[in-house]
Amino acid sequence: MLDRWKTFVRDVRAEVNKVTWPKRTEVRGTTIVVLVTCVVFGIYLWFVDIVMGRVLTWLYAVVG
Image 1 (cartoon, rainbow, N blue to C red):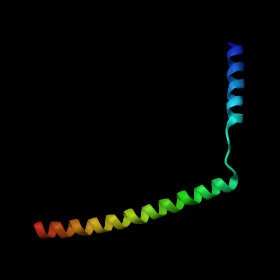
Image 2 (image 1 turned 90 degrees about the vertical axis):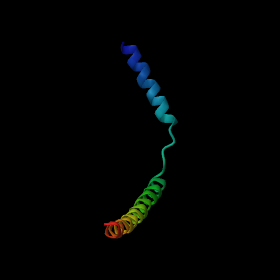
Image 3 (image 1 turned 120 degrees about the horizontal axis):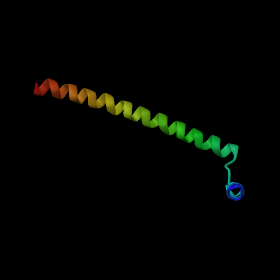
């Protein structure tokens, strides 16, 4: 049982060493892109919500 754990830990370390970790500047850049994208989509959906609300209010007033 202990040999299996040792093998497992050795394999995990070998796989982690194969990983290409991003640089701090890359992480910062992609984080900024994600935040800007979230803000843009949030504003877009807010605008669509306002327009659809007004359209539905008008439609309910017309239809009755």
